[in-house]
Length: 290
Image 1: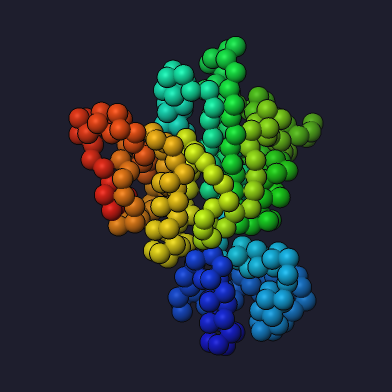
Image 2: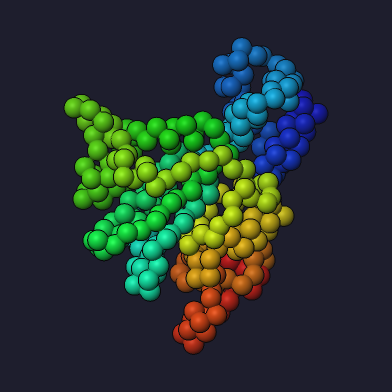
């Protein structure tokens, strides 16, 4: 891949996803793109670039985007976040709330939104006879991972972090071999998958959301895209809503008016909650989430 072709790829990826690739990523891009080129029986990088640009469906662009991101996830990742969500939902239910909307941004192959759904159902199950209206938006830019997630079938080795009491209830063996598990219908009913490109604004949803999970996604974006993304999250969160980010992510100087609750969890305060947390010693995150 010559420098000019790499620059075309770099600009295309930056313009469509907000991901910045430096010169040091050229060899990595070549390695990842070659696999797709073999599938298409293409041997010249310039031919593959033209193939991406001429595909009016956008599916090949999605394939290219897949090549520069890592869809690494697993069930019940960062269980502390899910416990915080459970406490948050319990407080809202006790206060009389019955309608909940949550968003898994960058849902990858579905383990995150399904884990959220299991925890939500477990929490709501403590209130027999109470009717709830719950929906979880699971969004990703990749058609491939969304199709995998919609199928809801996972190899046995991928469910090792799922609590034992959830297996057989929310994840059931797909067949007698026990080699794979399928997500239970009650979980699938409340998870809705949709393709969303987080670098494009405004988002095609209205909110408000009680919680937004955007974990290990913003590391791919440049500061301007992260700033716009966080501003959108803040505007779409309901007062008292929670934003969950990755434990290793740093978005210093990119967001205002959120309160840190614990590592990588932030609150959009209502007035009363803001005053309560301030009395408890918390300070608003003015210009920093870290």
